[in-house]
Image 1 (cartoon, rainbow, N blue to C red):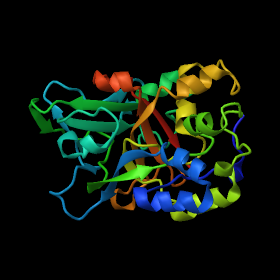
Image 2 (cartoon, rainbow, N blue to C red):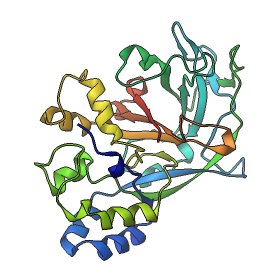
Image 3 (spheres, rainbow, N blue to C red):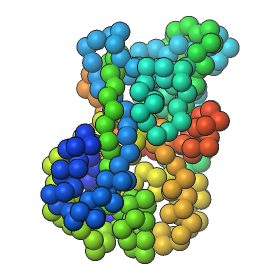
Length: 298
């Protein structure tokens, strides 16, 4: 079971005031207050021309500890380096996830350039999970920029600047459904003003960009990415009307998402995006190897 194509859309981000005005225009005061209470702060990342003023970058080469191996997918080859994020420069105090105060997050993904897209990293294929990795490098570790493995070409460097914005998610996301229609089928539209075409159109006209982001609600291109992750973790052994799927989806938060980006010559499928999610307890324990990956495109 899934939402119909005409229901799929990208949820929005913006200032608290702008989203409050939008909700007040289309929802009752009670529903607007409840909907606004479900917003989450996220660090929106944008390509910038200021190389020294950002919180990280897309592309280039990673700085790895001397003893660390370049991440690889056994039997397929090395992963491409996607992004680096300096935790000390993130506005972490304004977010609602427990990010490290310092250190660097490095994101790698087997993007198909080595095999012309023959092997895909898919949430439903456990053997492919090694095709996406997050590495955390502590601030006190000695690092050096690592040369690119044979066969790969680094993506162009695109420095990233950050700003905190509030993020919303789909009405059929488990957290919103639980607030407004807990008995409604998971991942489907239900009879409530937050699912009205008027409100959905207003949201999507307000903002239709996935973008790059740390924390906050994921901006899914298709169904909520949390449901994809939950299905994979549960080995696709539960139906969409099984409460265990909704419960598991609620156990994951967005760590990072990286959109297709012209400045870094990155294109994920048909203008898609890459997502890394993690359980809050694993984030608190800095177990980034337990982060889960998925990707979506139009």
